[in-house]
Length: 68
Image: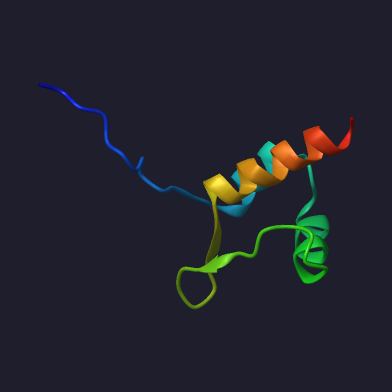
């Protein structure tokens, strides 16, 4: 029997993919993070960060809903 996992794997997105998915610039992403309007990045190592895919997708969905 092949059952689907109850929790799909969590994926982290690096900045180039976040930019591609959202259409925002690097500066816009970091400004929106500071304003509390975009998901916060997760530190990976000293200078590397990534964003949870589910949170970025949720932000995109909220933008689509907000447009009416």
